[in-house]
Image 1 (cartoon, chains in turn red, brown):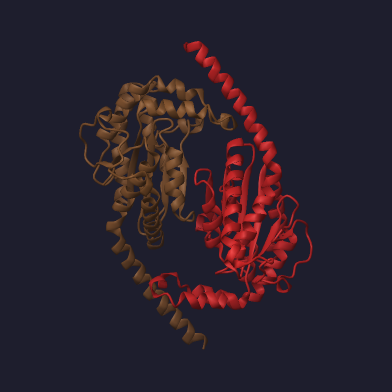
Image 2 (image 1 turned 30 degrees about the vertical axis):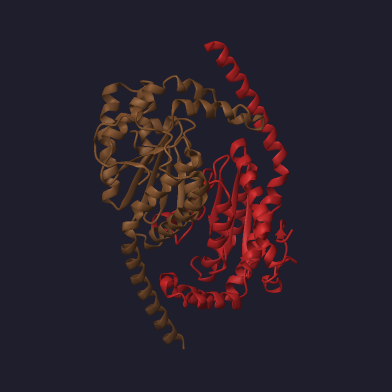
Length: 275
Length: 275
C-alpha cells in the first residue's frame, strides 16, 4: 500500500516520515492509475449503498493547504453524489460549543449505506484546541479516550472508519501559500490566519503525532499520506479506500443477490395476479 | 433554451408536450456539448459557494425511471462535492409524518453558499399523496398555497430555486422497466412498486399538470425536460441551471473582488507587524 497505515497505538514521528514520496510511480502514469482506482471506488461505494448494511466514514485531516479540499474533489467526486455527503466542521457555533465536543460530530455520522466525508473532524478538538490552549490540558487529554470509544461505537454498529492525514512539509506549505498570492483573481482565497497558524507548525505536528499514536485502531486506522505531490496523494488515498472496501465486496454482492431473488419473486407473483 | 420554462401560473397539459425532443442536437455532439456546460456549472457553483450571499436549491421530480438518479449523477457530479448536497426524500417516518408536510423539507434547505439537490421533494405531498388519497382533498388542495409561500420565503432569503420535471412517455417507462429485468446482476434494482404505480399513470400526469400549473413562479420556475433521450435530458437541465445562474456571475465576482482586497490588506498589515 502506498499510504502508511497505522492500525494500532504506537509511537509516530511525522518529522521522520517523508512528505514527497511517489511510491516509485511516475507522474505521467498517474491519470491512468487514478482513473482505474476511481472506477473501483465508484463500484464499491454503489455496492455499499445498495446493500445498505454498512456505512463508510472517511475523515480528512491535514495542515492548512495540505490539500483537504482537493482530495475531496478527486475522491468524493469519483463517487455517485446520491449516497455520499461531505460534512465540513468549522469553528463551533456558541450553540455547538455548549455541548460536549462529539455532539455535533455524532449528528453527521453516516446512515446505513451512506458514505460521509469529514472535512476536518472531532480531531480538531485535540489539535487546534490543544495548540491554542482553548481548554485545560486535563480536558483535552481525556478526549483521546472519548474519541476511541466513539469510533468503536461506530465501527461496532457497522460503520467502516478510515482516517487520512495529508502530510506536507513546512516548505511545501510556504510554496503553496505564496503561490496563492500570484493569482490575483483568487485573492479571496488568501487568509492571514494560515500564516499565523504556520507559526505553530511544530506544536501542530506534535499534536498530530499524539492523535495518530493514541487513536490508531484496527477498525479505525489512520493513513499517513505523503502529500507534497498532489497526484500521488490522490492515488494513495484512493488505493487505501479501495483496499479497505474490497474484502467487503463478496458479502455485499451476496446480500444484493438475495434481494434480487426476492424482487424477482415479487414481480412474478404480481404478474400472475394481474394477468 | 432547450427546456420548457414555466415561470408563472398557467394551464399545463403534459400529454401534449413531446417527451422525445432532441432540440435539433445530434447525439454525437452531446458529450462535447455537455462537457462545456459542466465546466460552466462547476465555475458558477464555486462562485456561489465562495461569495456566500446566496444559495441554490434544485428540485428534481419525475415518474419512476424518469432518470432522477441519472440526472443527479451527471449534474451534481459535475460540481465540487464540497459545497453541494443531495437530500433524498423517501416515505416519511412516523416522526416526520407527525409534523406538517414542510417540516422535514425545511430542515434540508441550503445554507448560504450551498447547493442542495432535492431528489423528490415536498411536491410528493401533492403527487403520490393525492393519487392515493393519503389525506382528504381539502387538505392537499391547501398545499399548493403553502408550497408557494414556502418557496417565496426561500427566494426572498436569497435562495435561487429551480424545479425540474423529467418528462418521459408511458412507452419509454415500460421499455426501461423491462430492460432492468434483462440485467440479472442488478435484479435488486427491480421493484414491483414501479409496476403498481404505473397503473396510476394518468392520475400522476394530472397531478403533475396541476402542481406545475399552480406552483410556477418567476423566482421559482418549473422546467419541463423532455427526458426520453438521456443525453438530451442532461444537456437541457445543465443549460437551464447555467442560464439561471449566469446573471448572478458579475455580482458574485464583485463580492469576491471586495473580499480579495480586504484579505490582501490584512496580509500586508500582518507582514508589517511581524517583519
